Image (cartoon, rainbow, N blue to C red; front, side):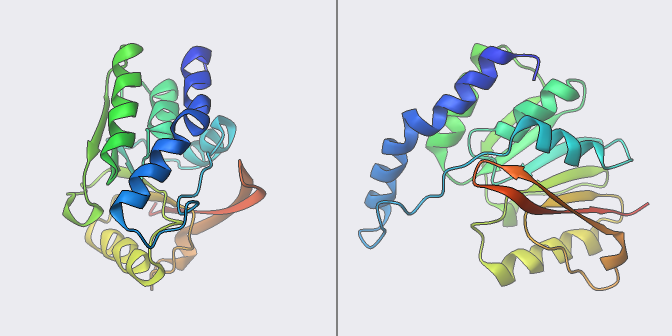
Length: 191
């Protein structure tokens, strides 16, 4: 990543905000374990390989489950002229990402508190589904719905994309992330 100062701040997030995440999770539900959230990141090189594996130039890049905007920042580093939107339910993560965006005066990045089910995807979107923490059946349903509704999208997912009639358009990669050497990623593109 060209902006090494920003990359260092992204990496510091895990240490600096781990305590806040745990405190908020306990406030949300007294039944949650102290380690309820999974901490990890997808390295720049992994994200770049996945993003560049898609041949079509998207109109915008949407990250579902963006946290502080890791992948949005990576995208902006590679394609600063194509807008990116990060969706997350955790306002404290979105707020932190927006502080970084403002601090580094980055354009074409929008990080918002938004529910996946309320967001309006568009033709030409490239969607990054950070969906390991999503409930299995619901994430399969939403990915299938998005693919069937929008013929001109592409999608990157940590979970398999098993949409009927589209399986032949899915490539699998096994790439490094912070939690394992060979995380499966699934890339859908309708050429």
